[in-house]
Amino acid sequence: MKLECLNCGQTWNWQQFIIKCPCGGRLEIKRDVAGLDGERLKEIFRERLRERMSIYASGVWRYKELIFPELPEDRIVTKYEGNTGLYAPEPIRKNIGIRGLHFKAQSENPSGSFKDNGMTVAVSHGRHLGYTRFACSSTGNTSASLAMYAAMGESSSFVFVPESGISENKVMQTLAYGAKVIRFDGTYDDGIVFLEQYAKDLGLYVCNSINPFRIAGQKSIIYEAAQYLNWELPDWIIVPGGALSNVTAIGKGLEDLWTLGMIPKCPRIALVQAEGASPFHKMMAAGAEKLRPEPEPQTVASALNIGNPPSWKAARRVLEFCRGVTCSVTDEEILLSKQIIDRSGIGCEPASAASLAGLRKLLAEKVIDKDETALCILTGNLLKDTDVLSKMANPGRAAYSSLTVEEIETLL
Ligand SMILES: Cc1ncc(COP(=O)(O)O)c(C=O)c1O
Ligand SMILES: N[C@@H](CCOP(=O)(O)O)C(=O)O
Image (cartoon, rainbow, N blue to C red; front, top):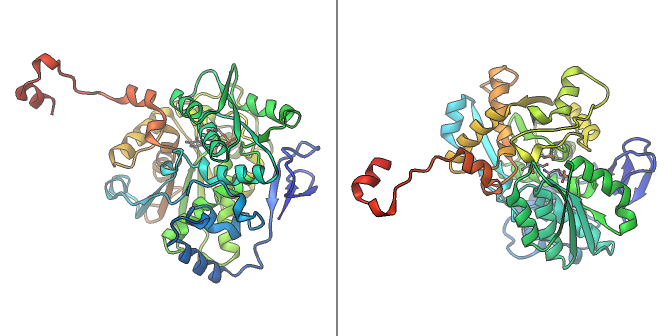
């Protein structure tokens, strides 16, 4: 395994932490999986599904050979992340009129979002290198996940969180795990710029998705979905996008499975952004060469409030590999889809619902055919954003003094 600059191609070994190439390019993990035996790996992964307490009970480290084989087992900080539900809600499938539909609920991770799949790998790598101070810029999920793993690894965490436009529940969760939270006037993107500039001097190991070990861990989301589906994935994987780490990771994961002959057919990816924070979709739709950052991203799906997605180049490459498409959806479409997912009993935070909203749109536009099958990635838990829940809720109320059976009946 080595780290390679996406821009100039310079390489480094993995035993050091470099946040950005001196040329300004992002780093990517390069690893040739072609020498591995896909069929043998399937057997190993099947065996490990029976594990309960070892690191292989984790739905990330079960796939260690494809993620970070070099890391010694005793350096791993895990909360048995992954192992999340795969659901096929029939009422939603019928309602949107598609042949097959699954949801992969990364919202069921220990800190409540897909970030845990990547964070266990980044924090383990950082600790292996001897770091004890971990940092990130965050709209709240990355920070909560980082704070949880840093605490599990007996280390400290420092997180930069925008003053407004995010869910306070996530900040409370981050604080509860013991992180030092620094609020600032700006966006997630400003926090990234700060960390790129000062993290090294401050001795901080950065756990944002500009760290390629985060991406490596998030590949497990698609490995696990494939394993649960007996290595036959649906035609489409639908992914909400902000910083574009997840779409990059899922694309790379698909590339691994395809290269190793572990899946008979490589699915296509549909990347869905919120309309008010959709610089990547705009670039792709215009066929433009470069991404033009959105200085004031604005969406009800606060986790997607990102105007300058760090992984856009890597995301474009994986979309090319799997013939991906992009689209954007409005806040209203996101909230309607959230209501559908919540009422199915699965539940999710607004950003996750962008996946179903995107699927509905792409079906209406006939980009996706109703005879095809799809898997929507649900990225965050329903309880992550109770402000949005309060706005959507319409609770029946009765005064305690008049709590009679007759009155309750009128509320049913
Ligand atoms: C719940 C949730 N969904 C989706 C996203 C978007 O994922 P990405 O930034 O990897 O594109 C994020 C955060 O980034 C998130 O917290
Ligand atoms: N929604 C994210 C923002 C992107 O963070 P990153 O981990 O991809 O850098 C958050 O929860 O902060």
